[in-house]
Length: 438
Image 1 (tube, rainbow, N blue to C red):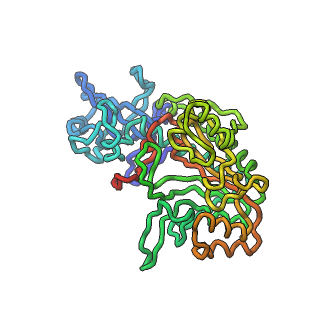
Image 2: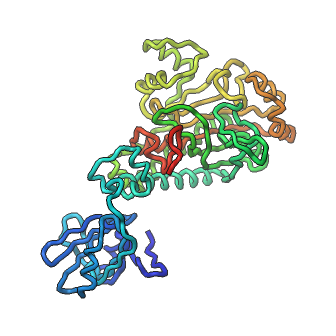
Image 3: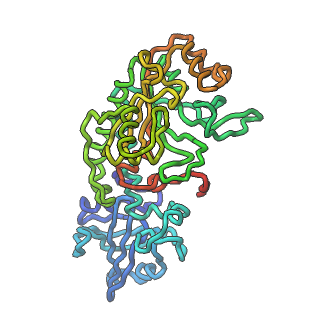
C-alpha cells in the first residue's frame, strides 16, 4: 500500500511499511487495539487497514504533556503517533515506533456495541447492526479485502477476453423475467421496477458492442429467508455475440480458475486469517444434464420426475455426490426464462446451464433467442404480455446476431472462496426481508 501524508500530517506510513523505514521518523495512524503500562513504559498497539504497529512510550524520554495524553485514550480511539522506527523485542512484531509524540484524533465512546478484536463473541445480527466497527476485526476485514481482489481479477479477465464494461439502468419500465419477485416503485406517477438483472439491455448491446459485461447490484423481492438469498445482490453479467452456450461455459470456467489463482496469490494473509486453503479447479468442469440429475436423484431415493424443478433439498443431495464446481445443462423449456433458446431437435429442452458448487447455484446462463418471431412465441408460452416487451422486441428487427451469456452471483462465489455459510457475512451491508439498516 502506498504511503501518503495528508493535510494534517497525521500519517506518513502504514503499519506494514515500518520495515522499510528503520531509523527514520514516521507518523502512523489508526485505532487503539491495546494499551498496557509496565513501570515507566507504556506499550500502545495501533491497528490500521494493513495490520498492527506497536508504539513504545518511555516516561523519562518524553515531556509530561505528551506522556499524559495516554491517560485519555480508550480502546478503538483513533490516534496518530510520531516517532523513530526500530526493531522490536516483541515476538509478534518485528518493528516498533519509539514514540516522540501522540495525538488523540477521535475518542471512542464506551461501552462499544461489540469488541472488534473478537475477544468477546458477538452474533451476526449484532455485528451487522454495527458493521463499520465490526470490520475492524481482522478476520472480517480480510473477507472484503479478498472480495476487492476477486472483483479486480474478474474485471481484468473479461477485459482481456475482449469484453467491454457497460452500465445499464436500475430503474426499468418492463419486468425482465415476467414480473415475479419485483420491487415496484413510483416513478413520477408511473409504475417502475428495480432491475432484477441487465438481461434485456445486455442482449441489445451485443448488436454493436459485440461482447459486454456489467458488475453491479440488482434486486429481487424474494421472500426467501435462507442463508444464501439477498434482496439486493451483486451480479457479474456477460453477453457475447457469435458465441454459443459451450463458448460462454468455457469463458465462465476460465474466469473461475483465473480468479482463484489470483486470489490465492494476492490474498495469502487474508486466506490464512480466514483459515481457508484454495485449490485451483481443473477445467473443464464436470457436466451433467438435467435428465441425468433427475435420474441420479431417483437412484438416491428422491421422488423426482422429468419436468420438476430441482429444489434446494434436491441440490443438497446432488451436491453431496458432485464435489466442487459442476454444470447442470439442458434444462426443460418450462424451467427457464423466455429468452433461452430451445434445442431444435429436442424442443422440450433448452441450450441452458447452471453452474453449481455443491448445493450452491453460482451462475446461470445459456444460448439466447435471437429471432423476433420465436421470442414472441416464447413470451406467449410463458403467459407474458408481448406488448409489454415491445421496446425490447423492436431491437430484434435491426439485425440481431446470435448470442449467449450468463449471470454470476458474486456474493455466492465469495461464500465458496471464504468458506462462509451465510451470504450476509460476505456482504458489507446486506439487505433481506428483515434488514434495511444500517
